[in-house]
Amino acid sequence: MTDLYPAADQRELLRQAAAAHTAASTDLEAFLRRLPEVPEPADITEYANLLSREERARAERQAAADMAGLELPSMETSD
Image (cartoon, rainbow, N blue to C red; front, top):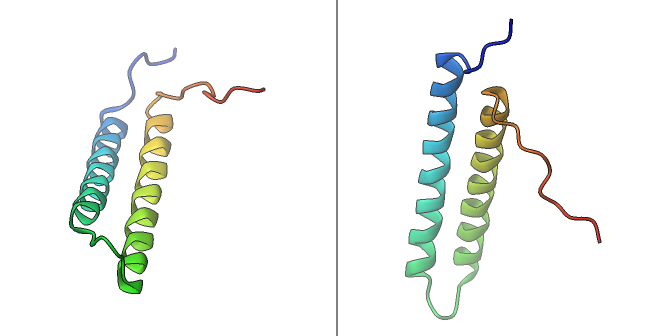
């Protein structure tokens, strides 16, 4: 028999992954709000680090969603 709902621990892992992704996105947004008109090399490095963190968190959130049974079909279209 297949469970209709994922185990509680999988849902909690998904909630934690979603929270981490939200935090990474919030940090990226905060950086972009304070970005000077002419970015310095340090700004570009910080942006790269924040973007990488956000992308990793998104991938971890998606993996947790898949494990919790929320796998989605591909949304890419073929031309």
